[in-house]
Length: 150
Image (cartoon, rainbow, N blue to C red; front, side, top):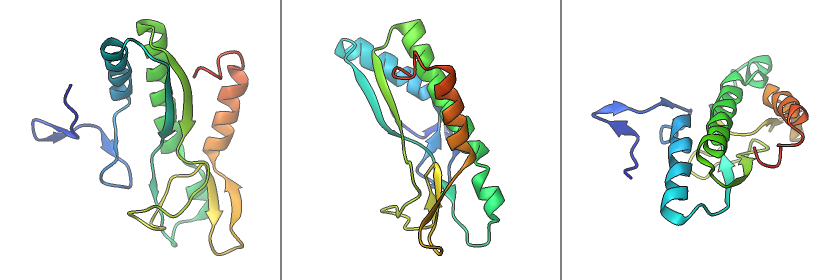
């Protein structure tokens, strides 16, 4: 299995705010299938999955809080994980979002935001839920019985 962000000189998937982060949800399905076949289907926990948005002090808060791209990202990745479970029998036991809160990123400082909660760095670190928080709340409520798996 070959891992690359480009195929035949063309970028695979859309890029998030960080140029190293390519959005390729079908790759998660392929990876889980590969892990199952190569390693005998061990339990898998996705411990950090997410995408970042650019952080600009000129952005309007309403726009920052409406993180539709992040919602689509997690929807697409979790759909591919669910397909890996249902269609391939992959033993996926958990999925954790990166990250709950906006924070300082090692290579990017405060220029990007990964969190489900917006952190107002200029107002006592106030935490404000983004639209993705409500989306996850609804997904988990709809799927209470399978939430531990998805």
